[in-house]
Amino acid sequence: MFLHIPCIVSNLPKPDLLHTMQIGMLDHLQKWIFHFMKTHKRLDKDNAIWLSMPAYHALTPKNKSYEEVSQWNGKEMKEMSRYLLGVVTQSLRGGSPAQRPIFNHAIECTRALLEFYMYAQYKSHDDATLSYMEDALHRFHTFKDVFLLGRAGKKAKAKANALRTKPVKKRKVDKETNAETWTPSKKRREMNAWRDYISHELDVSKELDADFNFPKIHLMSHWVEQISRYGALQQYSAERHEQPHKTNLKDGWNASSHILNYLPQVITFQRRILCFEVRELNLQALAQCRENSAAACKVLPSGADLAALLSPQSYAKPEFMGPQNRRDRKHPDAMIKDFRALVDNTQDATHRLAISSGTWEFIKHKSRNKTYISDEQLHAMELCIYHGIKVQVDGSDGKHISQMCRCTGSHSWRGGDRRNDWVWEKQRPGRCYGALNG
Amino acid sequence: MGNTLVPSMFMSDRTHLSNFASHKKEWPVYMTISNLASKIGQMPLTHSVVMVALLPIPIKNRNIPQKRLDEQRQTNREVLSEVLRRLLQPLTLKHNPSAESRYYNVLCADGNFRRSKPVLAAWLADCPEYSDLLHLERHACSWCECPKNELGDYVPPDKQHPRRDHNL
Image (cartoon, rainbow over all chains, first blue to last red; front, side):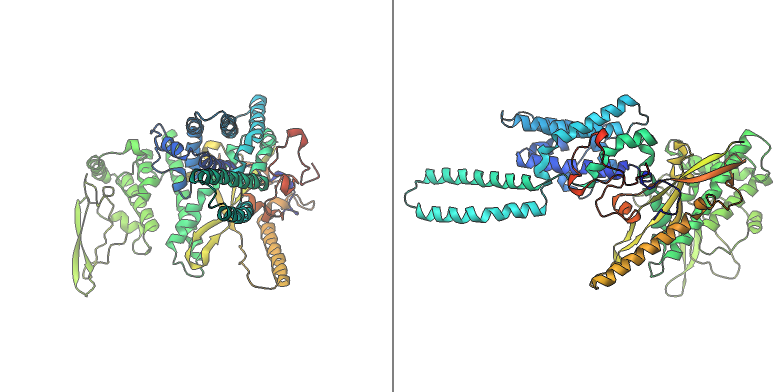
């Protein structure tokens, strides 16, 4: 594919933290631990400890055990990596002298993989951290055989189960021939010994067939070299390009008509949104420029006002004076007051221009019918504040009904956020009003 | 007079749109440059990552003869290769010996023009996509020629398997 491009092809792939580690190896490790706990009958203890994790800074308490959740995402895995070792160590406490070395190996293996992951997340590296990483990887590979049973796939399991048929038949014959001579206690003892023997045989067979040959475990061995050549891994994480899927494709798909040739619709939608957001960024940059030096732009009256008016949040959620972030969020009454002050100042022509151009952009952005008002018309129009307005719409039976739309003030609306929306209403004498759009 | 090297990073990732309507999928290619500060690059609102193309996803062929299937696969590969060639053409143009200038004049964020040279520095994708893009078999390492039955073994740093690109 890259034959014609001047580059070294095997340098193009870069380590991917998200897919290889967070939803790759950590997920595998969780499955192995789950299996390990099950075979050593520690699963209840493990789940109890897992569920009793308290909430802490950036840690959500779990209300489901590991196997109950169908799919884990990268963020949850990141959280989990911070307390997994504690959970494993606690749930593997005690045990008989025969079990102890196995448990210790399991704990060592978990710790080594988590250490490797933590080191891989570092934002800067030196020779020491790289050697620690290599060491952690080596330890992981030394102890990973504890979890070999968890790696048994369908084929290994089927093969092991096929081994069972012969002893079962033999056991049946034994039972019938010795039915009269064996006492009940002898029968029970025989049964237990037989069961242990079979399960041991199955485990040995599964372990023989299972292996760790899957790509992700191998990819880790290149990381130390890749870091020393191309720098920290965080910048190559797939999180960065999974995010734009939403704005570029999924939103467009949701807005499209889902028919056969949906792609033109998706692309038009995406381009419209993109152009608009880039324009917003430009305006914000201009506004900042205006604050810094008085020279730059003549169109923009006051940097702060305009930045607030045109901030992306105020488009995404139409609220008065769109709050920049949660901390700045004002009570709606206060916002209305702010806005009223702004309206009172609209005698100032530049302010008016800013508001009307912002409004114009908003209409272009939001409404489907883009042609029903022009910039100049809007500029000349009246600006009012109402807490509620009545709008006449066509009813389904042909009659006009009037609908009330009002802001909810400080109350929530149907369990959601409070609503203080912008309404652009167009009055035409002699004709009924169209239904409110959006 | 200095020149600016622009390491361009491409990323491709299949995404799933709908379970209905015959499992609609898309395969977008995103582009970004590595010269951006990470603080800017990581913010989605700054549009540091732009979508440049949608690659074609071949239809699944079931119940057709093996010979036709092979032909179809070959065609699919050629189509993908052609799409990528057109997509990456601006990167190759200036490497052509007959090109007038070796550099692009690029308008930078501070309002100045700079002589810059774009290179393909990285292509980020996940494992199955690498095997599609680099023509590897499934579950193969994209860096080295590690056999499939040794994937799980520990590889010391001084005993790495041979590279796929022997020029190194």
